[in-house]
Amino acid sequence: KAGVTQTPRYLIKTRGQQVTLSCSPISGHRSVSWYQQTPGQGLQFLFEYFSETQRNKGNFPGRFSGRQFSNSRSEMNVSTLELGDSALYLCASSLGTGGINYGYTFGSGTRLTVV
Amino acid sequence: GENVEQHPSTLSVQEGDSAVIKCTYSDSASNYFPWYKQELGKRPQLIIDIRSNVGEKKDQRIAVTLNKTAKHFSLHITETQPEDSAVYFCAARVNTDKLIFGTGTRLQVFP
Image (cartoon, rainbow over all chains, first blue to last red; front, side, top):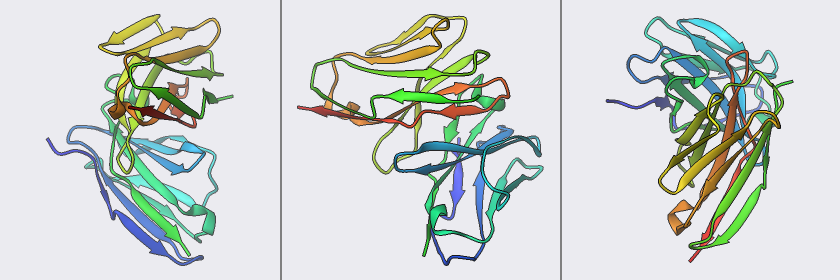
């Protein structure tokens, strides 16, 4: 059974550019959540999608957006990149929302560096 | 609010000793509390979880306890081994169905 696949693994972007990250969940999982991981801040919740609908949103500016497709694959977009957006972006898939029944399975993440 | 506090931020123990990591949560409606282990350069992985209708759960050397009244839960690792060295994250599922994580505890087990 394939795990959670995130692409690309690494990205280097210039301040002001925009970026799109992709996450393919485990087959059959309908929930995809996105987290930003930075040293000292742990895992900060960005948003969660379930069956193509955004179920929850964290406290990030509107420059951060996402969507989910009918095959449960999800993308997140960050526009007008800032230096502080440099982080590891992790997505997690689950059968149910909030990981209640089976927990989250995380992808390997996309490491974004903004220069 | 929706907040999970985790302590300590770093923990060093001798191999064979026990390690305890504590978390407190603010949303009294929280009903699910997982713990994740993240080894260096790897993805977080679920190691144990507990639901709000249970006070304690064990899995070999790992145990989690939950005190709903005080709104805190703890991870206990007994007979620690060098391979237990990692960053551990607690999390709480809040009533909006989000999973909110603590800021992590870096555990170092010295041989």
